[in-house]
Length: 388
Ligand code: COS
Image (cartoon, rainbow, N blue to C red):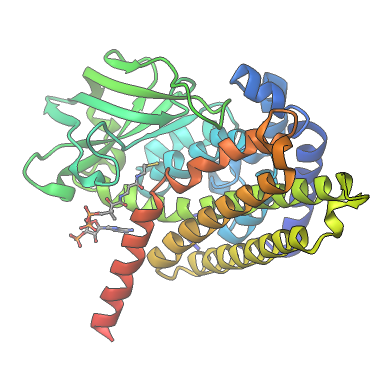
């Protein structure tokens, strides 16, 4: 299980219950402010910090909770019944950003950053995507050139979650221009380093409150010990490994948001009167509820199974991609049904489904599009068939 430890269900349940209470009492009521102001209110962020959520995937020896993946997906599915922008701070920091350090950092790098992450004092961004390198991540062009006991970084990164508020950036940059994926290394760049430029926040369709911006490196000099694990050429593999972990996490996020859509759908259907009775009495409405329940249950079962595989140390590239693919496509179908049940009321800002629908659209795109997930699943299946 590596950096995580086994959590018994008796330990997991109280944490999930505590998250549920905060979600229902504080986070859901503050969602409109999140969308209106495009920022998470400071007191709400404090509540998330107090719950320990900034520490969920950081090893215990560095001050974190060290949740097993099986425990993490249960906690995250509960947390993500609230608007997914709340997750972005903690999920990117503990996930793709922070896991680079957990997985491949030197002891010195772990000691420097992980306790601050676990305490909720250090937000991390993951800089892989570039203007011309999205799905084809290995084609990235940002350069890192060794200069004495420093590296000098030049290049641009796009759509970087958390970048306006991050204190640390895990940056994939090319140290060898002629060596494809093996020429990519990972650097830990601290906010405030001269030459690190954070552009104005992007105006997104949804997930408002989760700040995203482009980032560029303009002769940005970092000390040689900012190279992750002090090893060149390991950046792409590290990025792919943290993305495998993140894709199971994303599956759990989609399960949480799907659960919320079902709750909203049922609540509206029981309330809304047409033809002299609640629309929940009509079988065509019930069919939409039934399909959503069944598909959400399937996605949850899949995510929990993949999490157990990861905890057991089994290879799960195909299963992680399957979770992200199935759970995000499922979420999109459920979001559409929830809006359909609301009719015209779902299309205006009077009900939360309008906002959550905009939030839901991103999941089929980020941390690997559905089409990249299909590619990864098929590749792994074909590879396995060759060795049988
Ligand atoms: N775990 C460990 N190693 C991996 C890996 C994984 N999941 N995936 C690939 N690698 C290794 C490969 O084994 C290969 O090493 P060898 O040459 O020694 O075998 C190396 O990395 C290059 O891999 P590959 O040849 O598969 O690279 P590709 O350029 O073909 O990768 C995909 C293609 C589509 C899989 C990759 O670019 C990808 O995942 N793209 C999506 C990126 C993404 O999710 N972006 C979202 C933004 S980040 S939030």
